[in-house]
Amino acid sequence: MKCPQCVYTNPDGVKFCLSCGEKFFKNNTQENENSFFYEFAHYVDMVPRFQRSIEPKFQNIFSRVFRNHSELEADRLFIVGTALTTPKISEVKDTWPKPWLFARVFILSLLAFVGFYIGVSYFRNVNFIPGLIIVGAFAVPFTTLIFFWEMNAPQNIAFYRVIYVVMIGGILSMLVALVFFDILKNNINPITIGIAEELAKAITVITFVRYRKYRYILNGLLIGAAVGAGFAAFETAGYALRALLSGDSTNLYNTILWRGIFAPGGHIAWAALTGAAFCRVQGDHPFNLNMLFRFRFLRVFILVVLMHALWDTPITGMFPFGQIFLMLASWVVVFLLIRAGLKEISERKVMI
Image (cartoon, rainbow, N blue to C red; front, top):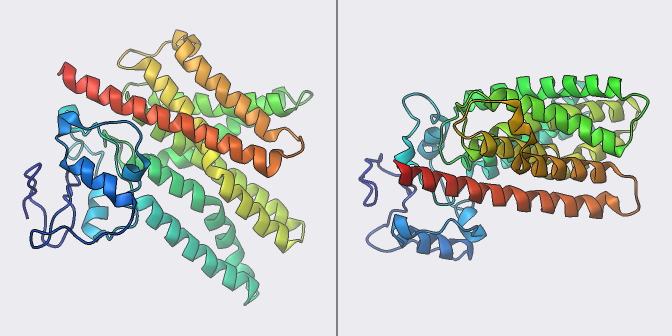
């Protein structure tokens, strides 16, 4: 089946073009869709590419979450980022991506967690406890990471590379944070905690993106989110183990639940913002330390540190209402940087 928009030849049976995402029609009639989310998506698909807006349209972003998708569509997502499958910048779409796989990943993770929960709570089998902690710690961070991966419009980072950054970047950032904590052991407070942990993640993220292979703002968001996801998941697993050793199973489940709820707006979003800010400053230029003192980077990094410090401040109402506010504020900045990243791609395409 040939796509009428990009002329890509698709396998039979798919509902969307595997290259550009164009929706196919059945018997020359549009599929019956009642969800409000679809209305704007259909409008965008009919607008010529050069007239499309990259302003944040949430109906557009999440319009494909509730649709049926074939395994072929998922397979195509997992093959991007290699030397053979990375598109040229002229072929990259500068409109808002429409992620959907992250929702499937969350559902699968939730089902796996329920299975481990049944094994522990109803069958009293302690062999299920490690799986319960691991799946519970990684479910939301990994889901959020998949969202950032789908939003990486240049499609120039392979999935295996993302997993590498999660594992190596996560543990490396935690070790660097421990070094800072050891230095500050006589002066630990919410501000020094924010500085130590965010600086540790920033150093790790910059280590991965400084060689200009990942030079786009959206690349910085993804690599930062990968480091943050590893940091958040490993930290949650540690807190969950502490709760388990306290002998209180309720405390274990509460730890996993609340840290899972707040995970997207904590370490993941903060590290993603730092990565995007650095890539925005670096661009195509070689790395030098002066980049870390430029206002465009410093303002984001300082904002992240302040958010982290407020998050850990033991004031009345901070949990959960203050943390909810901080999580929403973090994602407002995330979407602003996604928009900046898409504009960057549009500008680079014009320069070709």
